Length: 173
Image (cartoon, rainbow, N blue to C red; front, side, top):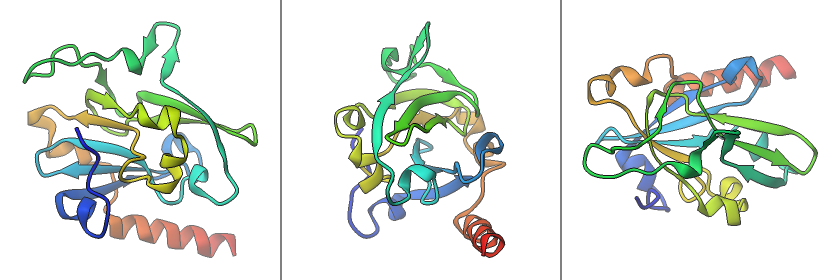
């Protein structure tokens, strides 16, 4: 699958943005789920994620989740996406280390089948920071058909997320 088209309106035209702030209670570790009208979801970092703040340099990205589970081993075939790893909302997709020694776990945020991970960010991690909602996406997840409407329950709309960001700014000043 090609990344959503860059440029004004590319991602906005076909994708609805949903946000999951403070995942697992970790402040500002926010993720964005771009939901396409065909129910495919693209998992990205939200604007406020610490990795997207100035001064952060990504040192490494690792799709090896545990000794027995690598998201790179995900092999999908056919229309029914046979062989795809099934993810829960809190399934880790990858771990990203920054040069300051911090490590961030990136979570799926939605239930569904893992269709692909973005291997381009392994060789070019700056894509994650420069184009987080297009070429720097993390993974593509396909929710079950019957769950495609309910999969975004518990996620925030763009407007609700902007209110969270505003509250954060006000409480920190």
